[in-house]
Image (cartoon, rainbow, N blue to C red):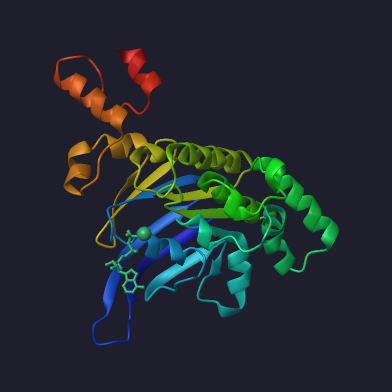
Length: 271
Ligand code: ADP
Ligand code: MG
């Protein structure tokens, strides 16, 4: 379980002009959950993400990963193994010259025996559908494939949590679908997924949606609860998913459709 307790964070905290990026954030993420974090630019999403694996430490409050405080210096590597990170730009996170070596890179650094590394690498490549491109150079792959290599690397590390910071924002539509499919695979494997995204429809499948604004958590709940509040989201410069917008417009035209429709299938049902 990840517990964020009353966390505040300032960049350049000790300088005369600290930049406050998080204020009083509290949140709990249970094992196996899929949590989506949304919010406009500069709302503190990436800053919060970096608190989940001790890349940043709170200025106030605490972050606990399976009961370990991220401020506990001797547990940093333990935490980094538990919580894998996928960033926006896939080119900045691949290190090896062929896909297979890249997937094996994490466990190799953990000093795991080579047969075990081999087994984990095979399994991770199979889950991320990379076996066919195992001998390719990462730079020859599509953006979606590169993100799958990054995720496979985390699977090979046997991390329990995967934090993704806008993993689809520089990808083409196909790449975005590939990443969303990868999230479903991770969930089937029982891995907790924290997805930061500015595409609202990517949050529809989440168990919990967290909305950030000005470093604060301003809304949270199930996608249905959060996306029913279209006006509030709009006041935060956010939209509801397209299908929810269409349903709301039809409701205003007098059709008997609730304001929190989340999928095309559901809308068709009501129609
Ligand atoms: P988001 O990911 O939601 O766009 P960030 O967490 O990146 O938001 O940024 C939150 C706030 O912190 C913004 O005001 C941003 O300018 C500031 N900030 C982010 N990174 C740094 C940094 N390395 N140094 C100083 N300020 C930063
Ligand atoms: Mg960001």
